[in-house]
Length: 113
Length: 114
Image 1: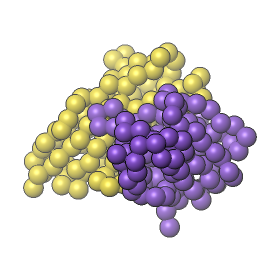
Image 2 (image 1 turned 45 degrees about the vertical axis):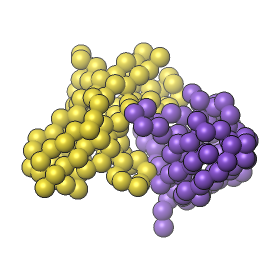
Image 3 (image 1 turned 90 degrees about the horizontal axis):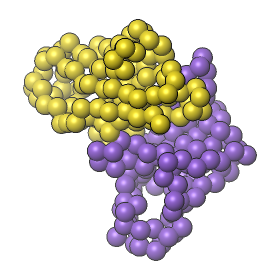
């Protein structure tokens, strides 16, 4: 079956540091890949997505590239802010699985001033 | 106003009690989902519905039931709550388009079963 593995947190960074959160996946077909973000006390919201190999999703300074050869979708940001503190979830969906989402365990990011 | 709303936002109950969590959406989406979130486990799918007449079990449906009263409403019930159902519950909606299925989440319901 499908699965998503993320690096465990928490990840603690100083403001303006470079961020990488690793995500790898296992899927039987050709999934779409997502990063969702959960700010404190809120539900998840879509951060970015990529639907095919070599696509790059980007939003709010975050980027992730769909790497089929390494089955990865690592999230990066060049300069984090305190307001980026949240839990980040990598997820996939497959057309042949009814487009259901499979989530990773989430990575908590804490950014200190 | 929020597109996906959940009530209640917080609930404390006792073992054996029946609990209903409600979800409403104004996005006009056909698909609705119920997830639970536990620390370190991400979100796990409980039930999903692709339209009013379509209800499907997810990964962890035991101990739960659902009702799709209308396109806009999808309720989750715990017939006899137990402590290991203490979790954060999320409702989500989606509308398949362009081959992908982006989901939109409610703010969550924190349920504690004593």
